[in-house]
Image (cartoon, rainbow, N blue to C red; front, side):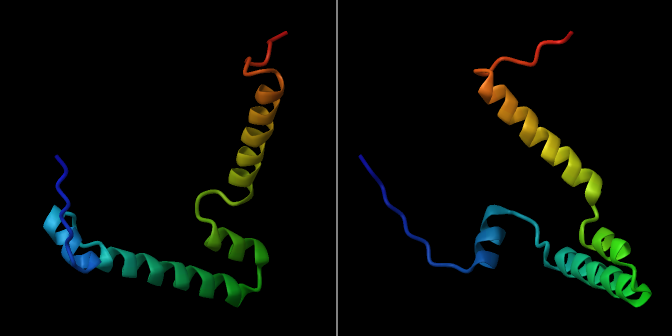
Length: 87
């Protein structure tokens, strides 16, 4: 037996129905904070500060770690799924 139920509602109504919190105020606050950080970085003319404002999770360091992860993963695939042997 199959039962098919179709609900016609907005995303806000669906979140309310499932008991999920309304995060719109938090999202607005975070967007305002990001805009303020970007404005401060642009005022100084320092591109590094601007990039840090755009990437609050580490900037270049996070990219380097992600790149290392990709290289390690590619190396593991090339070895047939075996971990790298330690000397």
